Image 1: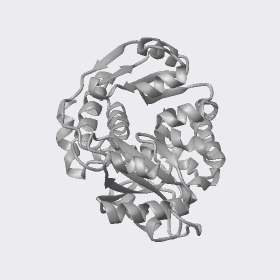
Image 2 (image 1 turned 90 degrees about the vertical axis):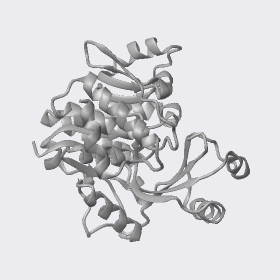
Image 3 (image 1 turned 120 degrees about the horizontal axis):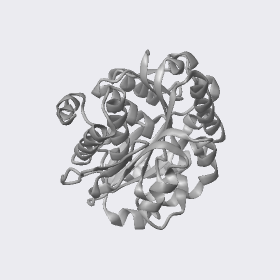
Length: 329
């Protein structure tokens, strides 16, 4: 295999700000959710945030991108299919991905347009709220899929956020179908409660006849299955995923390996920024299971890695922070 993980997802340049709760009331923003906005709204919001709070951090992002980069830093060979424009933000995005050791379909011959951006607002309770202008990433097409790289991968990893665009959803479905064609395992993440709440039919279309591995949090599991308890949701998820991991915030996580349910202990830390926690959980978990570890060990690494992420600002760890975490395997 050339790659352990082949990912497909949105390509967004993340701009992170530390804000207070009053900002959401002033701006009419729903806290704790991902909301799609237009370019003029983005420009206005950035102007207000930069003047009121100041930019904290900029990084290449997107849910699946964070997962793929995390797995790469742990030692996985990775490939990422995305779409960025021929602009400064696109140049920054590709450079950031290459620095993380991730191969991509994007080169110098990119389409004209505007690279997508995500405004990430973090409150003192460590909760993250996102307003996203998709830009050219909403035009992620099947032509962007690198079938040869996909065919030489152990897993494909599909981002749930792709459900919001017809073309991106079609590309995600094509990746799932190509994975089946080439005998590649399919992993998927729900990405955000809003995706399950407002785009459930599209999410089900992306899942198709089922996936090999599903990542979600407790709220997403309950929303998708319509269950009134976590045990019921876990039973319902078995109908759409051969295996899965459900994160439970400060309560840790549970992981179903197809025959046994593993309870993953939390790592108690002072949370500073929850942005990227679920992405890192998936990246660490995928790294572990593609390197000979069972679900219990994968859960330990994923729990520790995601706890480490939330204890500092930003959606990812620095490269050198990953190796010491592998001691829990």
